[in-house]
Length: 112
Image (tube, rainbow, N blue to C red):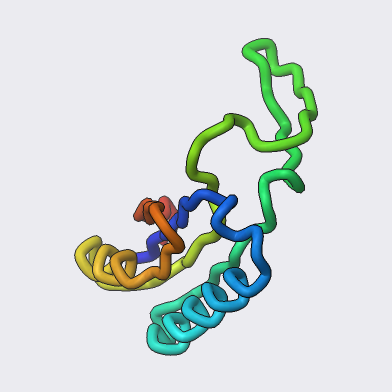
């Protein structure tokens, strides 16, 4: 079954390029260890580069700079994995490198 592992962290932790380089190294090491279980993923640029398309109840669309909501933790990246069950996905989520405090949300995909 395929699961999306959504990585949430405080992006202020990544203002120094050396921190980005080190956490990227850690992620690449984990990806290498996961082998064929890893189906895709990437880090994301800072939320300051985001653009949000909002839909009103009447269907009208509007475009806004920045993320939809201000939160302490921002979506910073994701892994897509194909594993037998939720327990296997959670085991991988526990291994995802996190800088400071953060979380990994594990969600099954609708399409198998």
